Length: 107
Image 1 (cartoon, one colour):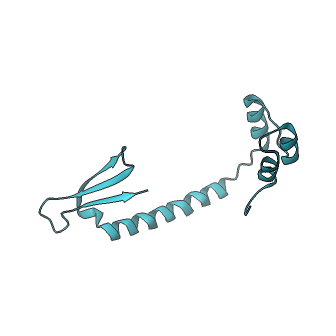
Image 2 (cartoon, one colour; image 1 turned 90 degrees about the horizontal axis):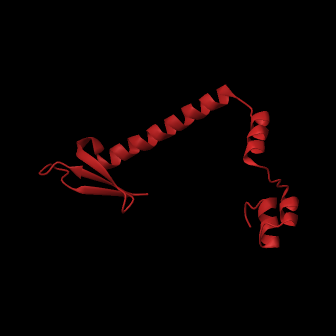
Image 3 (cartoon, helix red, strand yellow; image 1 turned 180 degrees about the horizontal axis):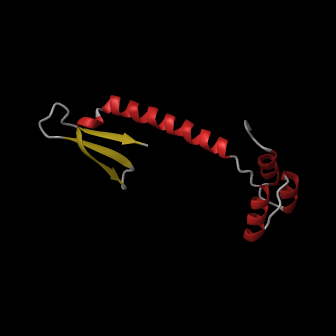
């Protein structure tokens, strides 16, 4: 199993999450309140890393959006809709314009 963890191997070997598989994987079950206490005690705040992550992803999203605009000429389109039934973005151009067509972008 490429990228498998000890937890993955324990689960596969046991066939389900048994106490032995949980112990082998190093998993300890705790209640929600205890989990929050543990998480709070181990939370490392790193504002610089968080800021860098925000900058990196904002830049990456901007690059993707620019490519989308160049590819489909979105600024020339009249409107767009999100179809819940088909999970598609549908862009509509002005009728009679040079880009009088519908674009469908599937995820």
